[in-house]
Length: 149
Image 1 (cartoon, helix red, strand yellow):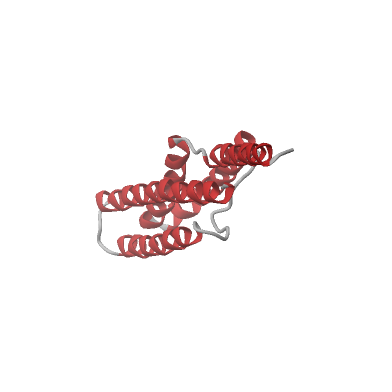
Image 2 (cartoon, rainbow, N blue to C red; image 1 turned 90 degrees about the vertical axis):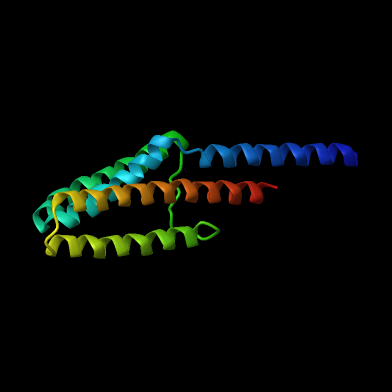
């Protein structure tokens, strides 16, 4: 084996790693929307009442587990958002934003606010969580591709 054969073999390995990275990081739009939907339900239910929050919680947890199982079935893996790497700051920022939305939801619950304001906050939670999911996935994909090279 000469140096050109070795270079060609390394290039093939790198190409395979890039394809694997793209496969693992491939996330369809509906998956991002489902993630956002979890936060729509969470923030919306918190803003309405304790009873609605308690009634909704099991469905949110079951939906999260089903999303995780679907990811494993489709890709063979589930990538935890709290993994080390370039995505961790994005995850932590999402957590901070959602804590702020939980605070706002509690203010709406105990204040004199109508369902319109509560729905608007839930829609905001959906939009932010969906956007974070898309952004997180983009950073994850870049990180995987960089590691494959």
